[in-house]
Length: 147
Image (cartoon, rainbow, N blue to C red):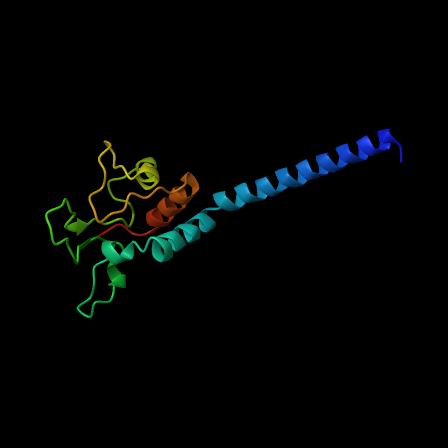
């Protein structure tokens, strides 16, 4: 094989790799933008990773989460022993009342509410990626807002 043929073969391999990479990126973009997949990924992040229901869902007398009031807001079941800023109530997040999509995304990416204030503890200052935040917002928006 001549030097010219080797260069052509190398260029063909690079073009093929580029085409495959672009194809995979397009598939990934399509999958991330599928609304049902966004909601499902957001549900996973909310329910299994961040465990939002532990604070944002009221409990039954038995101590179990009240699934009929899922993420509808609840009084905090605990508080610090010493004096410290503390939220006595975890607000309703189902349906994201009071937040635009972009405001909720910013909160989940930076830990800051509209206006720039930080959430009071025990709410952690999440640092989600934009895609993760969009997924969480898609899930929360899919839920019925509080009664």
